[in-house]
Amino acid sequence: MRETTKRKITGNFDWQPASVVSAFVQGEDAKDIYDSIKDLNLGWCDYDPKTKTLRGDNPFIEARIDSLVRPLGLRVANLGDLGRPEIMRIVKGKYYSGTPALVLRSMKDSNTTNLPLVKRVAELAEEKAGKLKFPFMVKGFDSPESYSVVPRDDFTVICDERLDGKYDGKKFSDVDELGLPVFDKGGNRTWYARGEGLSGVYLDSDLGLYSRNDYLAYSDDYGRVVLVSEANQKFSAEGAARENLGMRLNELKVERDRQVEEAIAVVEKKYGKAMKLMKG
Image (cartoon, rainbow, N blue to C red; front, side, top):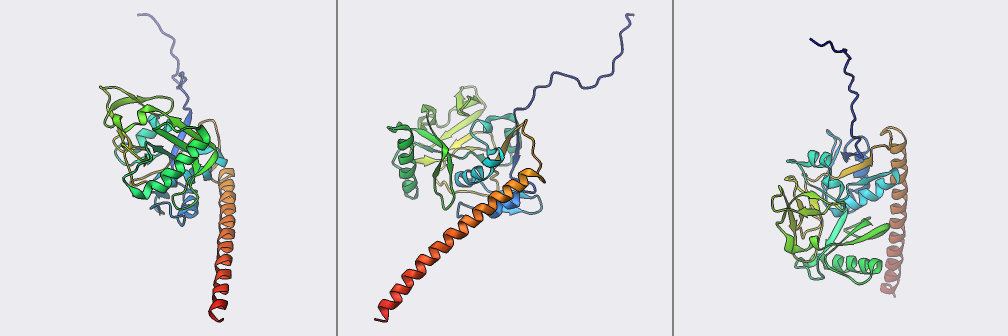
């Protein structure tokens, strides 16, 4: 029998490094995030103190949280991120999770409550990219209040035929670098696309991509916002990241209070004038 040199196995393999790490809005900072958005009328959301988890998800909630965490080097999952195995694993069979993006397929929308936002998104897209070519997706915006869309410096317009409603029900297994489906008749996932108007984009619990919703503000307790960080970025929840987030939230609170005070002053001034007129 040939003798072999015994060597202790230590786990020294050619490991493939993860490019990102992900998490729900869950943990010590989740309550601060919730407190910063709960009064903004962005759609239903809730905080579970037992699990320290933010529940609820729609494009406006995603966009607001994305803008809050960007200064920390974090982001809400983009469409490409939603195709990562590590994110699909935590969503599968339990939740839905969207990306801070909106898809516009036409200026017509049978849900008439969307029409002001349809107009707004179209104007922003035309200003950014020139003549409109439907369908297209926009990302890189904030939603500081009541279903608003405020473009950031990274506002982007993506035109792609696959966003068209005619591809509703098409199968796929993989996505490309944009996170859009690579259609395949033998695929095990489904692309759902609305035929008109405005919608968001979600990773559903069955791992399909869902862009058929016409009620943009819809949110329920199965919704989870997913946060993403580059894997080589190190931060401490009790250290710099928490301190920076707290400072950012405080700045936003001060700004919100200032705007409220200005609005009250305007109303009181108008009220005073009206009372003088009534008294002659």
